[in-house]
Image (cartoon, rainbow, N blue to C red; front, side):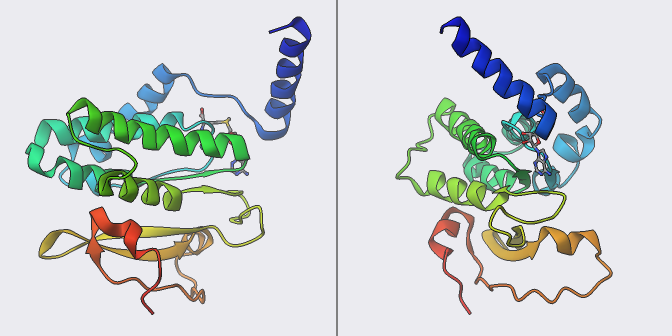
Length: 215
Ligand SMILES: C[S@@+](CC[C@H](N)C(=O)[O-])C[C@H]1O[C@@H](n2cnc3c(N)ncnc32)[C@H](O)[C@@H]1O
């Protein structure tokens, strides 16, 4: 890299710090902050399903750390036969918003990459053609959204929409996708007149096959 390349990069990042507050939290500080919510994240009864929303995801450093800790707890506490199912519910519990296109892509890739790394390190196939990968990639695309947290809108001006991935009583494999808008969370007492698409329950390994609505 030449000196002028380095200077351009520096100026770009200086401008981004000024315009978007783009300063990344170092990993030791991320860990200290997550220690404060350890009960919900990895200790309590229903830790897998405890939801986390990162409103300014940056390159995904908090998302990766949250998923790592949930996956480590799954590994420690559950039988290996249910690791893939529980890992999908874990990734489904992590939500994020990011304004900038490149950071949004990095956050998405980092979260999905961490999921794949966990499974490959245990000898579980998680290549792009597996249902495990496709379901995780679909969930990450749905949960990690590009937009403005302050306005609750995407770059195209639409409402930021997320989904709950609700476990179905009686069958631990099954989930039901329930869409909601970010703005609907801000005033829970108010009526939400948004017309949401409705989805039939399906196995969590097959959520990517339910991309179309069952009306
Ligand atoms: C200070 S960085 C923090 C990144 C990460 N949370 C961390 O602590 O390392 C801020 C990030 O928030 C994004 N951002 C700034 N304003 C935003 C907004 N209104 N909505 C969503 N993201 C925003 C920036 O693009 C940048 O990637």
